[in-house]
Length: 219
Image (cartoon, rainbow, N blue to C red; front, side, top):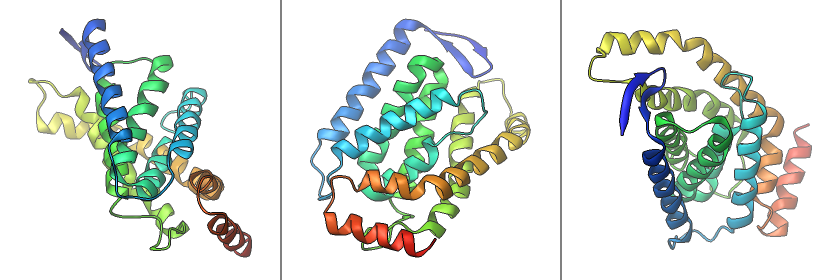
């Protein structure tokens, strides 16, 4: 089932990977249909953002760690909560890796983006009225990087790796973490309000108009 250790951890057989993917997909569907106390209308915004995140990640695959997935996980988690946020992380990972390639790392990518969404459901980038706070979003561009990076890096650990070796692996990846942060900041500053409009597409019209007015007033 699990073969030799590779660059991204143990090699997983196609059969095991199929079972893992099917299990994660079923878990995502369960998270989406499971009753939740929030009154936010999430289905179409979440579906559209999953598609945008997956396609963007595939299209930008040639640029290491630069993609809108992380900042979208933050926004979805903050707006719709941990339940929908984790479902978003699963669906984006499964969809994009169907092109980029599945493997043991897929499990940790799901955990990474899911944890970012979960943390954002607590350290929100929206105020109590549901309005996007750009300062908080910019800060999330930073704190989300180590959360995702450390969890994804766990995929390479095997019984023969020491804590020092793992630490050196993290240090060697700092340049990619910087790129990740800069990419997050770019998408937050340039597309944050556009993503927010998609999150509000099924919301009350007056809330969307209010957000638009506040955005224009800051330009």
